[in-house]
Length: 377
Image 1 (tube, rainbow, N blue to C red):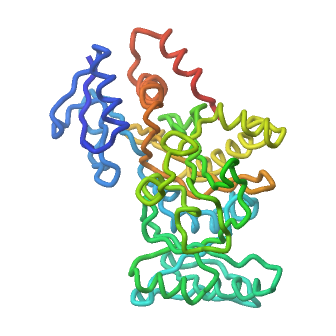
Image 2 (tube, rainbow, N blue to C red; image 1 turned 90 degrees about the vertical axis):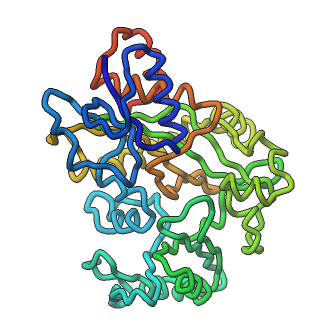
C-alpha cells in the first residue's frame, strides 16, 4: 500500500487525482502533516523541498519541480529567453518583450548602445529605456506599434493594459506598483468565423520524474465572444480570451461555443474547411517544438535525477496563432486548471505516467490505454 498527502485543497486537478488514487485500492491518504508519505500533492508556492527524500526507507515524489517558475512567471520567462544560450539566438516564437519595474522600486536600468540592448547583468534590471528605443523605431506610419502590459504574477486578465502609447503603458505600470512585462501585441491574429473572433490555445504538458515530456493530445481553444477590433484597444472583451473576462462581461458568452471552448477535433475540422490545412500539419509541429525548447532549456537547473526525492509537474502552455499560421508562445502556467470534460482523462494520465512509473501498480493494461492519450516529445 502506497501513501500520499494532499496539501493543496484548492487544486481541482489534484483533488481529482486524489479521488482516483483512493478508488484504485492501492493508495492510502494520510493526514497532511504526516512526513511518512510516498507522494505529496502539494501547494505550488509552499513546498518543503529541503525536507523531502530524507525519510528512511521511503521513496518520495512531489507534484512540482523546484525552479520551474523560471518558465511560469512572465518576467522570469522573458529573462530566460533573453539570457539562455539555447533560446536567445533561435527563439522566433516569442513576442518581443521587456521587463519593467515600477519607478518606486529604484531598479537599475538596462543600458542601450546604438539602440541595442547590452547583456542583462542584474536579476532586477528595468528595461524601459530599451523598450522606448524599440517603440520609437516603430513610429512609422506603416509600423504596428501596439503593446500589451501584463503583471508578471497576474492571472485571470488582471493587471493588463493594451495601448499604442508608450507613456500610458509605463505610467500604468508605475501606478500598479508591481513588475510587469511589456510585450509586442499580436495585431493580426488568426480569427475564428463566424464572429471574426480571437482565440488562444491551451495545451497541457506532463513532465515526469525522468524528465520525459508528454503532450496531452487534447487541447482547447479559449474563444472570445465579440468581434476582434484592432482600433478599439479599450474593449478588453474582444482582445482578451480569459474565461473570467468573457463570462463576466460579454453578453454573447457561450453563443458560438459552449463555455467559449472549442476542442481540437472541432478546431481541426474548422482549419480543413476554412483554410485547407490540418492541425497536425500546420500548428501542432510548432507547438511541440516550442514546448521541447522551453523545458529542455531549464532541465539542467531543475532536474531531480540526482536528488533524494523525485518530481513531476503538469504545465499549461498558452499559444496564439497569427494570420500566417505562425504559433507564438504567450505564457506558461505551472498549476493549470483543466477543461471540465477533460478532468478524468487528464488526471488518470497523470497517475499512469507520472505516479505509477515511480510506484508501480498491478494493472499495466490500463496504463497503456492512458499513454495513448499523450504524445511523448
